[in-house]
Length: 210
Ligand code: AP5
Image (tube, rainbow, N blue to C red; front, side, top):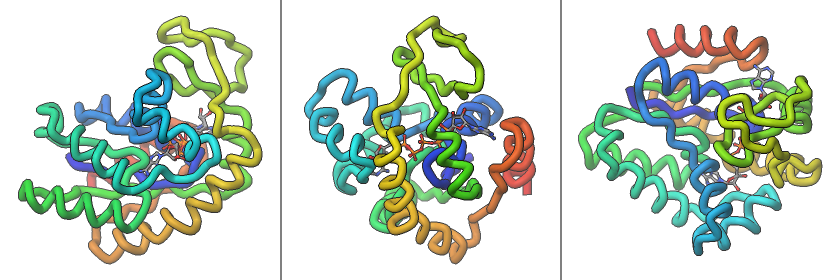
């Protein structure tokens, strides 16, 4: 299975990616997680990405394309992968097409998670994540520690109101055109991301089985 998860910030890509990756036994490749880890480690990549990310801007294409190309070289990608947060621009989508063609393979499905902006603002405003393992926690509970690893729960620096607004604008301008791009190549599956996490996952599973 080679799958791309598309969707606005807060649509539930990371939440669903964890479940899809487990169900299909494929690695979950999140460019956001890779970049956040680089920021945490204070690497050169992290230092250059941090300013873009906290403003809600995209990190430059050539940087992100390089990250994904390097990740694809790992042997676990031979059996497939789930891309979460990549591609995000037409240039990134074309780079992905080229990399797949060079390996004589193609995408099986692009899942577009669809939800309105009021709901994603609500979700992002209340999200917390584990500062240690990165697990996503819906803050409707009052937990202070991560249920998986006991790490401290924190608010992502780009979940501030101004950054959320900018991320949504960037999504509309630069990422939404990919819905049309993948629709033309016949791999697009539109899935409503409204409802419980399990309801959304059932819809995704059905879309992947078609
Ligand atoms: P990235 O980490 O990819 O962030 P994003 O796309 O903005 O998406 P999010 O992680 O905010 O949301 P999500 O859709 O994963 O939702 P989640 O499952 O957490 O990117 C961050 C930044 O890195 C970018 O802004 C950019 O700077 C940079 N970057 C990354 N990739 C790049 C690229 N390719 N090119 C250039 N720059 C790049 O869910 C959100 C909340 O909702 C959670 O609290 C969750 O518990 C809750 N929730 C989930 N599902 C449901 C549900 N069904 N009902 C109710 N609540 C739900």
